[in-house]
Length: 267
Image 1 (cartoon, rainbow, N blue to C red):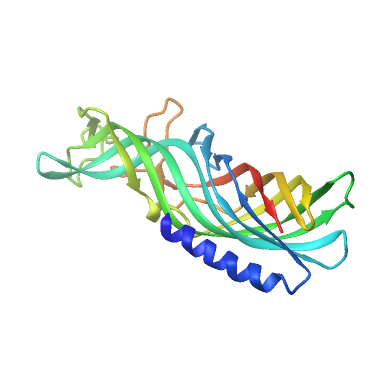
Image 2: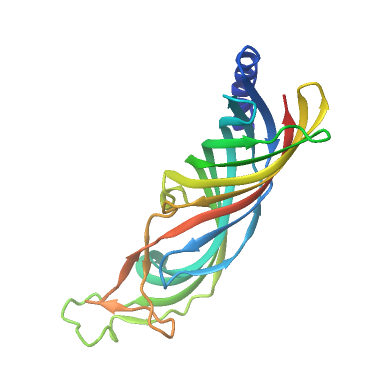
């Protein structure tokens, strides 16, 4: 986190120095947000919204008094909570055993995001300028952690390839207590890139010369799949589906969305 903050500050100082000689507006902001993961498969259950935090620098290239192209650099933390069935290998009494588990993951995903938006600004009305923006965002995932609640559902006890009677001899109810894992590294289960639609409304309140306080409400709607990996298909009663003595798998799919409150200072 310290390295990321230092990197952002160095970039911001360089941009600020260069922007002073251009027709640009630059803002430093913090972005608390409410984020969630919206699953794109019937066997993934959405559990709720999460409060996350981000910050960044926004840069507007003014090509008229009221229109600008906006870009910048954001350090964005998003997340959400999902429940699904998972197939894993588990060390049981010193032996690797195939398991089906029910896992609830509370994701915390960090991105470096570069937005590109069209920004419209009104003329100043009693110290206040109103603005709106619309555009796209490209994020690169650089860290992903999750807290997990794991319930063991089934375990494989028969590896005989001649066993064919509907998996009854191969899989039994697991007799292992549920467990929790905190701060698990799940970067391998998160897509490297995140693309999104960005829309926002806000105000600038002039406090002195070209310096203003800025506040806005930003909707950041991810439209690329945030997850990688496999889940286990479920029956209507929630039991895992087996095929040829193995769990039937599907691709994990979920979109990541957030609404953030952007507060900062504009120069």
